[in-house]
Length: 452
Ligand code: PMP
Image 1 (spheres, rainbow, N blue to C red):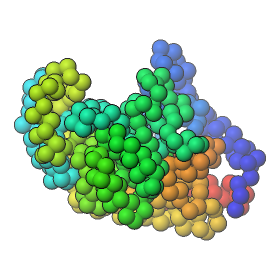
Image 2: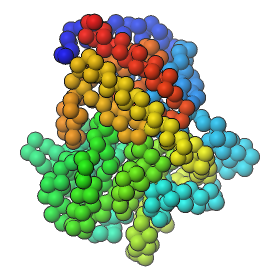
Image 3: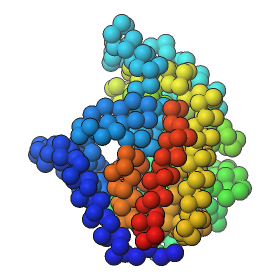
Image 4: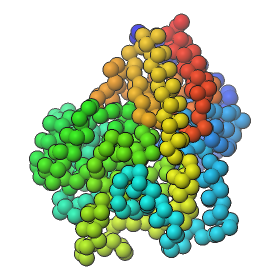
């Protein structure tokens, strides 16, 4: 079934008008924000199907309310930062205790909670030694420095169309000639990215081997499923192949679980018995409070600490003043101990399965050439069928107009998806009724698109 582009444009204009009429306070706030770069607190907040962003009033569980008084079922959940649900009571209690009763938000002194969190992350992800940051980006950056230092090699290999935060080395894609080039739009790259990085397509072990055979790759840094260009799942045997090739060429393996944590309490690393040398995580593990972490194997940690030429204590390039602060650590403990537990994942994954299967059923019912993939508690559809197998294919399947229309149609009817994706994430309080509500509205959108 083809989409009539004229109908799409007309429907989009209608939804824009509805959105504008319903959000006068958000519109005014945006127009008044003349002291902000791009009118928003962070430039990416200009990713807005409605012409201006919805301004937050408050949020609780999987519900968000805007300053114009509308309530939304939130499937964006701060795109994973709030996978525990907004302001979960257990997390809030731990934050309040640290803020009100104990005091001490940033002190340059460790708290005992940190060892509890390290032990719990070890139990879940299997890495022996943990260190904290404030963002997953920084955890990636510091891991990259460590692997370079320990291997004496200069390059890091990424998947094409990966995302690991604003990490300089990662802004590389496979170009038309099959070799690495700077990702389109790369802002002020410090050096040509091919000097620091190599790239291979996801699910392509031949290309990976071709690149690793150069012998200059310190580490392969990957998401075990791509989650920032749809959800691209690994083919059977792909990860075994990646691990075998990295070992063959003396390259370390860093797995970034920041989003793929949705697969289960120990992410895909635990679920699929992956064997990384380093695990990266961030966003969700402190229930919405900024944090990130990297976990090292005991052997790697020992070797790094034995290197007296590396300044790991002062200004050697690894660390941040507020990293591991008492508030982040208390929030991580509460989130891991009480909220994102084994039982919570079971429920979240079951709810996501209802989301996934219902959306696929609608694509089948209306004979749409679209498809959806699920990764534990998250699911994301793409305007392609079958689902793309690598980042370049997934990028080619993007359709900005269609995406904006669907986002706006849903938002106008009280449902939020992640602005950058057709992605829905479940938190512990997301219900099957919430998912069914989404499906009802989504079906109406499809019918209107198809003129039925
Ligand atoms: N790693 C992955 C896999 C991510 O998806 C992201 C952000 N989307 C990051 C790292 C960076 O996270 P942050 O922006 O919180 O540093």
